Length: 576
Image 1 (tube, rainbow, N blue to C red):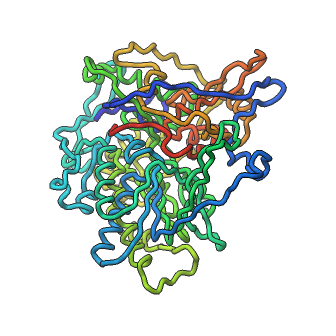
Image 2 (cartoon, rainbow, N blue to C red):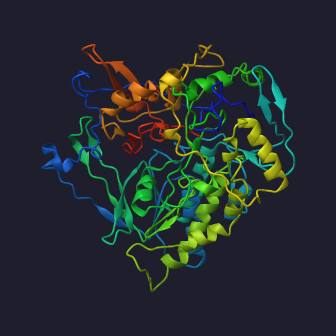
Image 3 (cartoon, rainbow, N blue to C red):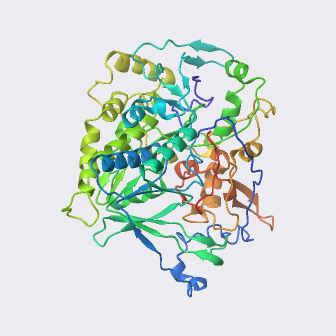
């Protein structure tokens, strides 16, 4: 594993968008689709957003005669998200049901076309939770084939590196772990879940949280399909379906679309620090301040460091992807339980930042959730104060688990880099307070606020000149996106919605010189001249979206709201 000094603008913290190069079996070169109404930005705002979450259909005459009733189905437990956490919870629930000879219907929905298709990680897996779930995982053929044999940790200068020893006990030490393609592990977990009787529904995006009259969670609704780009119903329009449950588990992954709604509905972030976000491989802070910084181009430049380039020389680029990661850690964990539901996995944020590992903690959270809710959901005389079952025992059990102990011990490492000495001050802090005291200092450091608030106006920053890609080690953005396998049904409303269509030009472009055209790792956002030639407008190439959610996180106006597209759309990482 390789570390690097922070960017030339002395961006002080790590962060947000995973760019990896791995095997891809198919390519979808169809890139830019767009289409917006013609308008002069100096006279009026072009209409960009057509999604029903911004423009309600009950006020649209085109929808007046459309049947909007949804079919509803009932399960004991519904799980949103087919990642490590959701699948671990599903597996553990069915293991317990079989062990106690109980009938238990567990349904899991996943927005990707197949399990693992949206899973992206250069994962160095700590197998503790997997071993707890399946002690015989080796005999079962789990795809853990490459044990870690050596660790390298370095500080990069412009052309050289300074080796840093990895002492026993430091979180960067990986002996006993495995290098895995996480998408393959997710698919394998799906096979185990299906054998146990879990109902898996890939290709169905959970678009809406449903509530009982007492405002407890009732379940979820999947997305409607057959809506045209202009927001009108097509002849093939089909309403999504409702899945009701006694308890709904939300394991959507980083910056979950439904979790954002739940935070507001139940005020779950009232007593925690704001979440902050990160990237794997080459870490560039989403809390960076220069709007001219491009995470994708920083990644390309990083590959040309002599220590990295020597490893990549002679190789072939065969895939590309991007993914945001939670980096807030212990102090950013929200309240996890509420009437009718639980938050599990990377959705609330259980990543161990200095380890750059969250899979084992996500899986463990799913296991603990299953063990907490099983006796309640199978009780013959179900006793609940709310229509949706409340399971506070999950949060209690988590706080006495290895997950809580692990995250608490490293809680100050990430925020310690917010100091006048930056990288070096953070390393000194880590050496003193983690290696010696194991995180037992009696204080908890705070983060600097949400990442969206860290950008400075463009007039206060210097544009960054990035070297041109050489086509061998570094590459351009569009040819990279073509290797992500990304595809969406073209004739649907852009799922990258704007709360106010006028904000991008009036604020983001005017003050920050349009940072969304740089922080997006897929070329989704472009500022282009209006057709009349007297202004600029924002163009959203939604079909390129790789679902990393960086835009929702980093937009300085917090005007972008990422919502789910039609189920099955998005990247096809195929084990990347």
